[in-house]
Length: 95
Image (tube, rainbow, N blue to C red; front, side, top):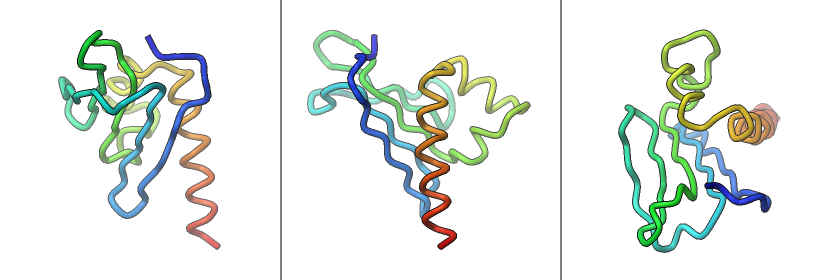
């Protein structure tokens, strides 16, 4: 389960990758069961500590199969936080 502290979120606009971590990821591994969505888990507890979303623009487009898959994995709360970061990144790129 993800923690309630403020997560680390970063969007790489060059490669269209969204990084989200909500815990210590120093001892973790990535599990990609769905294309373009890596669930980052703690090695000892198997607890989810983050996500890496590749092709984020495509994955986060509402009313698509990719969006449905993304939402089924990360949920609305995490998605809203990622989109806030994405929106900030896009406003900086446009300047």
